[in-house]
Image (spheres, rainbow, N blue to C red):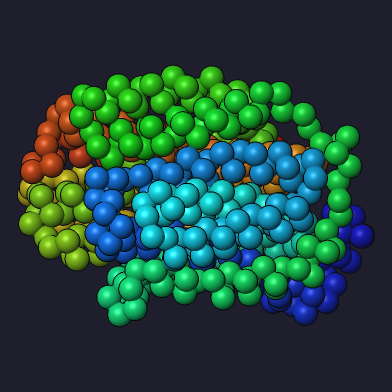
Length: 458
């Protein structure tokens, strides 16, 4: 570390809640929390929306429209950040998200609601990528683990309280306030970021990378990822073909969307981007079937079946906070540990999937899995931004999100195929056991990929 870097990191305010960064930290926290609440809570209010707008036949479309738009925005905003700067994206994306909230809250037809969901998806996809770039620009290296730990909490906490809170708002005030109630907070989040955005340097467009074929790749991702996700959520022979078609469109585009060598674990940034996908795919590939296992195999109520996911989210949040307070631990060590936690927890979920197993073991095991994710996810983000050249941080941030979405969709889809082929929702054990073992094997692959890595030699 140079003397300049040391001085910079010890300067007043150079931490999350210092005088010079407090407003930025709060603004980032607000925007991500609002986006996460909207993303996770809308499902609770959706039945009321569809009933009032006569859109029951379009039940899945608000989710599909949102996902397609967010994928495209995720891809394109990374390029814009590198060519024009994160400032432009963070001035436009939250405004688009805000417009989506207002349009949704005043919608009088399903077509307007779907248009609003597209706006929300564009806003969310753009602002998440730009916030990653902003974190790298505003906070010194030692503070970034804490910053990404805070972002993890901003996603995790809404996953715990979001659906319930959205339900209460819908019951007390009406579904429109699930959208409109967030508008003042979204405005405040943008206002808090303005000072930091003014201080961001503007990159020279000539220095930014040229991504040939990026618009087509963004379109392929916007079509392919939702197709695979749809197939995963509605497993059948028909949707299997839809999922395969989505993969056929998506896979060639990955050469543009991800760093070269990502899928083969090439050392450096590609290996780190791959790890984000392996973590997300393995974790969510099992999580999707935890409530089904507990209700169908062990007869738990839906409320009790969701409890392990809640305690797992708490484990994720606490582990994220813990690693953020320990910037001296090598990020590769935390990534290896995260994969090991995940391998242990996922493989042990077999003892929950069988009828003679204990349903109460799920809470402990999912806490272990959540802790592994909490240790690793912020570390992956920190390492990716460290390895990426300054003029390619937008691309790296976008690639992290794409890797996450692609592997999640593909491995959850694989689980859906196994469920349809080997078992049924009424008796899922024959499928859930191999699902648990396959996802644990994915985590073991992660351990092996990072077994000899250090922060200096990833």
